[in-house]
Length: 160
Image (cartoon, rainbow, N blue to C red):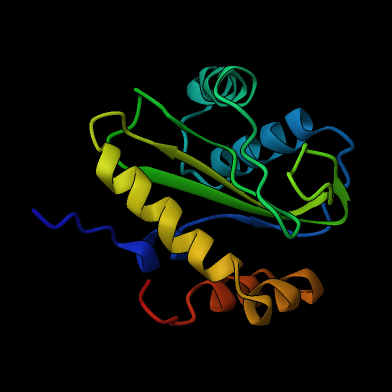
């Protein structure tokens, strides 16, 4: 059975934070969770539980930093029945332990329902496919407007 993920809708509803200045990856994760709360995409009373699950995934499940300055901290969060995303851009980057040793500068925080594991993986694949492309990744780092980031992440790319 084909799993469908409304990638464009997830990106359209994602809060985008530019000019992040945190120095630790845990602070980046908390900032992005707070952005979800402020955007009305996560109930305030779920803030700490969401952070605990993301933190546990980072510590126990391994690093979610990819190469080329990209990190996708993610977890399956039982309080949700869908996928919620927040995007951050950090001009200086944060050491997140990426395999290539580069600091992470683009962050895509993903919270998704544990009842939809295939949708979770499909979304991670869709966003990663775009962020692998320098023609998308590099302009994101230069963006001065959240809508420019959103437009880049919504740009069609060849199927994998």
